Amino acid sequence: MGIEPGRLHFSWISSAESTKFAKVATEVTQAVKELGPNRHFVKEKVKVA
Amino acid sequence: MQEYTDKIRQIARRLLEEGTVDMVIGFRKGSMPMMNEPCMVRRPQDVDQLVWDSNCGINLANYLTNRKEKIGVVAKGCDSRNIVTHIIENKIDRDQLHIIGVPCGAMIDKRKIASLVEGEITDVTETEEGKVIVKGEGFEKSFDKAEVLQENCAICIHRNPVVHDEMVAEPVEEQTDVDRYADIREIEAMSDAERKAFFDDLYKECIRCYACRNACPLCYCPTCFVDESRPQWVGKGQNENDIRTFHFLRAYHCAGRCTDCGACERACPVGIKVRMLTKKLEKDCKELFDWEAGISLENRPPLDAYRPDDPDEFIK
Image (cartoon, rainbow over all chains, first blue to last red; front, side, top):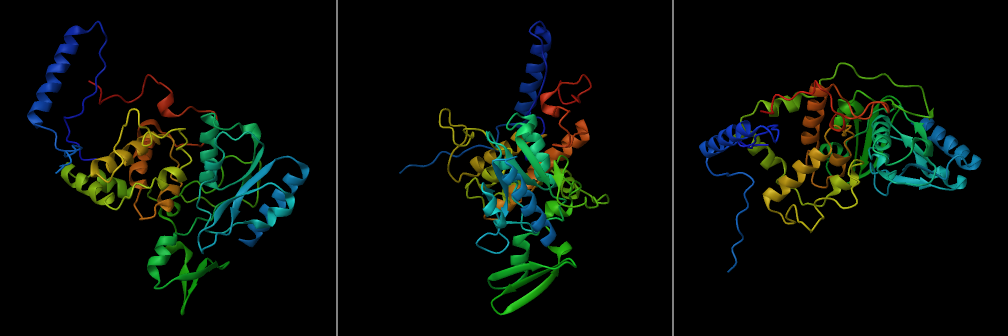
């Protein structure tokens, strides 16, 4: 569909797996930061005169 | 084709006279060539409206949703698979139905034919030898039916109904040597930017009329997500993101359910290849779960059943 690889992540984390949660959250933010701001599926604000 | 029509009328008359069903759903001639329309017959004297030819592309399973009466329904291969899906999803009861199975000889593509001739078409007929004769003001052309098939019919591998109570003719031979997913593999091979450009181009004509949704037997939600206003999931205008959101989401709602009947593409007034998305999901279901929608009443669809060996490489 044209969404960059690395912007969408899936993971399965139990409520008992706090360290895994922290690790995945860091990895996800890292990956998304590298890609920069999202450009697809962004609506421009309508300009009202 | 005339034998099919005669046989359908004969069966419908018998069912209505005996009171086996309250209504028979089939096709009748439309007001324009190549535009047969669904027809609900309730009285035996009206069965002569029913016809069968190569313009019966509309999916009749669409008219069964939540019906309460006993219904006789004319079903070609894809209709029967959507009827199975309807039964699995509790939209109709198998006992309510008398399925009149039609071995399908594939449907013709009205858009393709219109693009091959100039001027208005006034009459389209078929011969027993597999020719389609198109007449209009000042012209008459003949085409091989195989050349003017609907795209989904050309690659169909389930022409015979998968469930039926009676058949109007002997089963036709199924195609076995077709490559169903050549176009999808091409899209899969594209880079992200190319793919984005491909989809931008695919939907640029969309006018958000929702004809694809209305023609689809899978789209039976009481309130579709595009019509919801609290919350409003998707904007109502012509913004390209809203158009894409509509098409992508609609396609995902059909994952593991779509039978590639082509009703969406047939209904589209601007000729968008709506099937490009649903076909990708169909391919994935086949490859990942070895699943084809609407083949059996016994198995649960992949998105509604858990198996320990479900593929999950994408989950970290």
